[in-house]
Length: 174
Image (cartoon, rainbow, N blue to C red; front, top):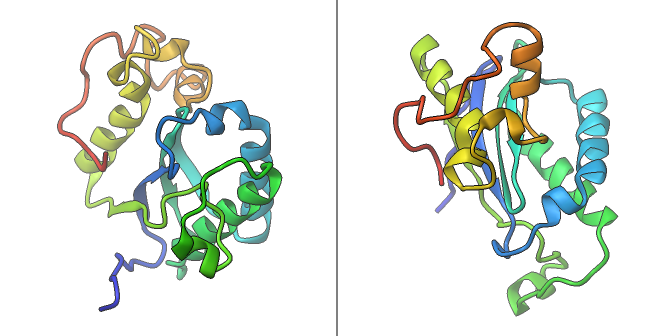
């Protein structure tokens, strides 16, 4: 059976991408490598990052793809592979992954959701920015350094006091 993903050229998508070993802190330990890989992939295969947060073991993002393009799977594959190449081999690699020549850094699948409308978009952005508070890393969303919330505050889209309590609706992809 083939897994079917949303396909809307030029659409905006919400993603949750997890490390295979959820107790690791690799994403923030290696944040400069992750940022570098994102830049490289965006240069070769453009997309816009509407919002994003990187936590120790997973990340959430909303991307908007160029008109006529719906290939986010290729981009995620390049990001995961590029990041994996930057990381020393210290992870557990199960037999299935060994047989396929894979590393054990990322979960194979990820969650994607096609953004339906402005309310859906706004709820997912709030969820992204509030996620470090939800997981107990900080008490205020603005205190998490690896978040697009800082761009939203700088651009005066939201106040710096935003995110000290639950300010979104629902749970998304965790």
